Each structure stands twice: as C-alpha cells, then as structure tokens.
Image 1 (tube, rainbow, N blue to C red):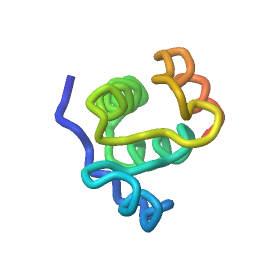
Image 2: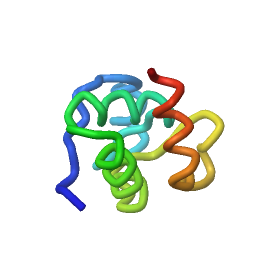
Image 3: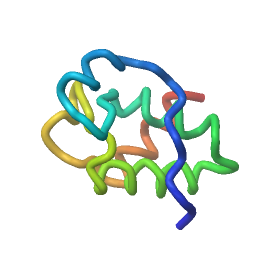
Image 4: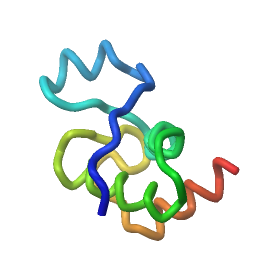
Length: 82
C-alpha cells in the first residue's frame, strides 16, 4: 500500500478545524474524489481511503459517519464518481 495522499479539497475545512485538531471531515464521495485526483488507479484509491479512515486522519460525515466503510462501499463510490 502506498503512502497517504494529502487531501487538497477544503471541504468543510472550518468545521473540521474546530472539531478535530489533526483530521478532516468529509463525505465518502468527497474523500474518494479528492484521493482519486492524486492516485494512479482505483485500487490505490480504495487502499488510500481505507488507510486514511482507519488511521483517524479523516472522519466521515453523512451516511458513513459512525463507521468505517468496507472496501465494497468505497468501490461503489468510485463507480458513482465516473
């Protein structure tokens, strides 16, 4: 698995800064879109997204707010962005 990809998107940045000191809060689709801008293929997107979520560096809002999505959930969001 490659190294974590920095998230360039300033989505919900103000809220994330006040609630979490060292992480960002995004929807799963926003996270997939941001990571896919920096990766070479969809497999790398899935691996990076799951790594960011499991490490606690990114927290999800929306439907996946209370749990880490499965790889299948991430693949579905990749399909939705195309």
